Image 1 (spheres, each protein chain N blue to C red):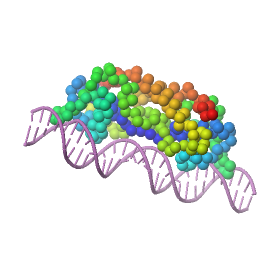
Image 2: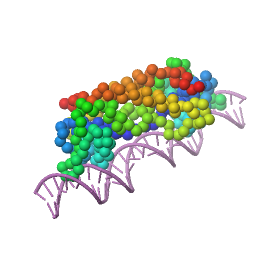
Image 3: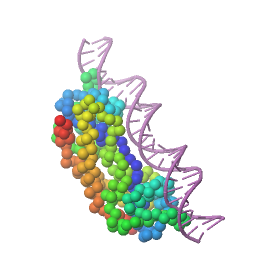
Length: 135
Length: 135
DNA sequence: AAAACTGTAATAAAATTTATTACAATATAA
DNA sequence: TTATATTGTAATAAATTTTATTACAGTTTT
């Protein structure tokens, strides 16, 4: 399991705290305690989903592109997900076995349903709600 | 992300199909297409949670220890989970940063809540429901 | 022109996951 | 009672994924 969700949420929470001021990837990386290059890569993704914008050059950095109340955590999850929520066997199950032959399709529908429940839960909370907890 | 959940569910589905007959780890591994030693390790865990029993020696193998209708997928998930559901940053966030200092506790409560929603969803379905799809 | 940034590629290192090998212990059955 | 097929388990290796590092071009500010 990678750490893209917590890293992204950490970034967004810091940007919310900055109240529109640009924040450098070095500063973000220092709070998260990971390599700044990873932060910049994650910001590429957050930008792709319209959560943040960045400014190049000296004094540059990133800032929130929408209000924290308009970013919900379900959307953040959707922006970073890659794996199947409950894991997947990389090897092809045996097609000669009646169970093996069909299990991936049934797992997939199970995962889709479970992921939907997860996203619904996450979507109840916005970045503003989350950031408000830091006092 | 490892594949313990799909592997466990695959094992359980095969055992359900065997209707009480013992099934060897070699057979299970052949359907799943993974190494038999991994299957045996996973079976140690499934046994620990009371889902299956095993018989050693020639003609040995495993079989369901309860009816498939009494095993729900939320319990299977609980038996194999190890990571935080949405990933975790292995590095300690910066304790000098007000956000870094508190984020892990807030993430944890977020995860607990999200995981609960996920488990509730999975628990709606038993192994019998899942296995019934293979026709 | 110097400085402080972002963007990005290439590579290395670390961590995790899966596979393999080996063999003791156990149970069946010839 | 011996051969055989199996589980249980440890040790190790291989493969994959994740994270870190290095390097540097491009951008903006001062």
